[in-house]
Image 1 (cartoon, rainbow, N blue to C red):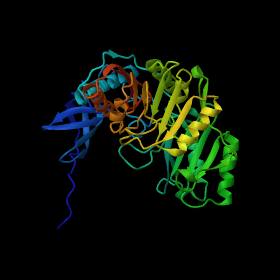
Image 2: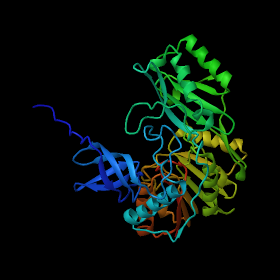
Image 3: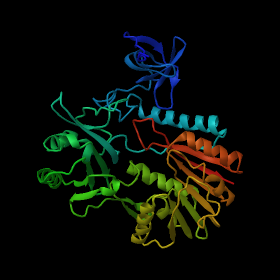
Length: 440
């Protein structure tokens, strides 16, 4: 049997009208009775596009000319926009980005969950540029260019984009991409160093260099000299996340503060922390206000991580029960509580993607905070609802799973969706972060 021949893409641009936006920010059009998802298009625009992919199930394209622009179209700030996959909405006015994300949230709640909030919250907004404190940058020596590239992947490709700078990354890294590329280019291990993990705290920036082979003494010396000269913390990762070791300084320190609650949280470069510090501070404040913990109440914080919500909640509640799946994170959350002088928290390690009806930490709970990953919290919801907590605040990084879980809480467990709204954790992208309040 011969090889299946690839569908040949039409070479000439096609003119069409954009009917709406998909949840990932691409324009939606219909051409020749097929739905086409078009990068770089906005609702209502007349554009010319070229096909980039066409299969039986999916057709995609890319704008090459805007014939009639939408009112919300703006000129992208970054010269690399359209090639780099780090951003997807720089061509849309920031206010319109927020409106679009709010619409995505409400549409998901209605369509998937069959619910609507009684009140729509004002969006939480913050810095549009230089906000991103966590990132994984690709590193690649490209022989035909004769040099190393450092940056995000190209849109829809495993290739590393050829970037001079990045406006959404924190300036301590976004302005040093060429410098990092030159640094790696001068290493003996330049072809065996696939990525750099970025983590920025309130007072320091860490770079974790993943290397596939042991580094020579000369390479280690070059990296240490760079760290000292630039005032950056450099760590090395020869294997998995547990293998990370400091190069310079010997005891690197990263932390972020939540001043409203007099909380400081220390973290490691590979720990999960929110990428946008300003939005995180506002999000924590909003979540605590929505949950409104009282001095006589026990609060359950599920998917608690390092204590981003647990420790602030503990300033008002009688007790906070923090539950997290990663035992190492649980231990660090417990240590962080002690470091902050907080003694009314208890910390448990448990896989929250299962039924925990008999768990010792799920007893006499007054209120609950949920901050699950993209998969949502469907497995643990029945056990939580069985405790009949008066309020549940749900922080979500994926509107579809929030909507699914909201439908469960409202339609199966007797809760009202009191309010919900978006938080612009990732400006210039289609990522939708949101928060919702449920009451019995």
